[in-house]
Image 1 (tube, rainbow, N blue to C red):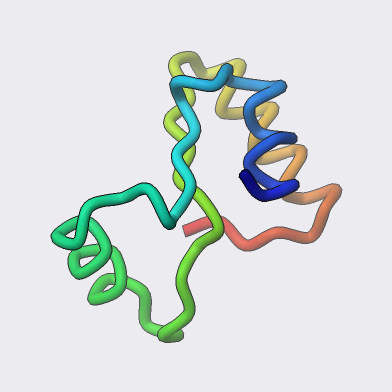
Image 2 (image 1 turned 45 degrees about the vertical axis):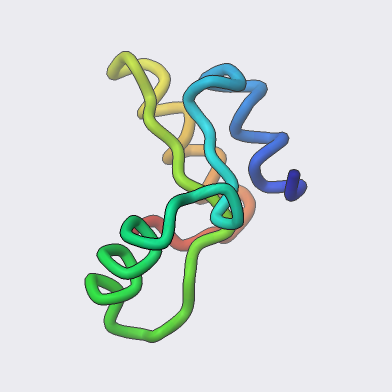
Length: 68
């Protein structure tokens, strides 16, 4: 698991974070088509509450991560 995913897990829990490598091929295709830059994310995170979302956004800002 990437360092980014590990940091996000500390905010939202293990079940809410998925590594890019563990996604199914159809998920890869859909997400890759939606990302204009052609790059892919390290992981996907699904916050359960507004508070978790706020923490994820604040962490991304501190770490200078992109959010899509």
